[in-house]
Image (tube, rainbow, N blue to C red; front, side):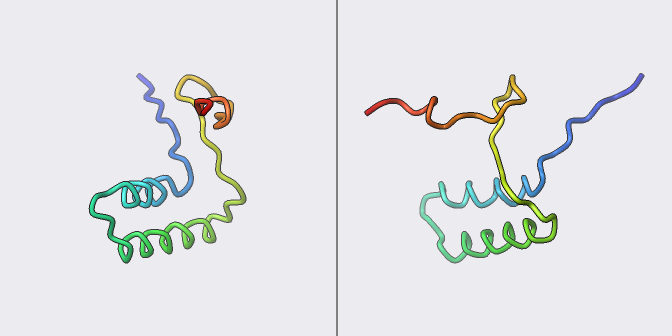
Amino acid sequence: METTTTPRPVCAQEALALLNCAAAHPYDRDKCVALLDALRDCIAQKKVKKFSLVEPSSTAPADAAKSESKR
């Protein structure tokens, strides 16, 4: 039986760590800056040009403007 694995987005672990740091209470600026540096290093190493978000049930990039509620 074959098992298929979904490829992990480039620098996903670094990006997720940075987002979780930014959302943490209390906010630890020094830790988040270190995580930002780690993400930038990963981006430079992997030569990432642009990130996009994908809906779980779709392969098209999510449109943030559509998901935001009008104020």
